[in-house]
Amino acid sequence: MRILPMLFTTLSLIAVAGDHPAARDVAPLTPAQIHTLLTSPLRHVRAVDARAARVIAEGLRGSRTFAHLVAALDHTDVIVYVETVTTLPASLSGRMLLSAAPRGPRYVRVQVQAYLHPKEIVAALGHELVHALEVSQDPEVTDDASLVRLYERIGLGGKGTTHFDTIAAQNAGRRVRSELL
Image (cartoon, rainbow, N blue to C red; front, side):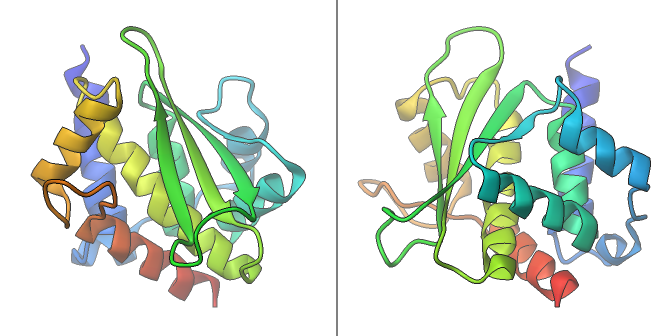
């Protein structure tokens, strides 16, 4: 039974984050679907602060890609807490941190730079949401060591670094940014 949510997530990730032609054909979410993604007590993308709540709402309303990333996360075992911060290194617009959990839901914290233009914050969050989906696709990722192994396998960067990225996340960030402009 776990294969169906993972398959849906994989197909959603390919459709909305890749350079595949289908990414342009993703249907917009309805206002009712957006409302549910913002307010459901069972939602998987949750704001920690008021600014993060505004960023999530702006992303859901302004970017099909962003909305579908959030919707795809609702079909996973990963719960994302989003916060805007001023303490990230200047070279980072966002980052994802994993809370270790051997069983049950997995929790990640996404931090995005608070001082960026609001549309840049939404794009950075879209980028980080792809990373959360990447984590959701590997049930073995339950702690920092397994997270590093995942990104050594699928990411850009290499052994001995703690800064990883993926082409899918980069593409999603660019797509979200272009949809918001």
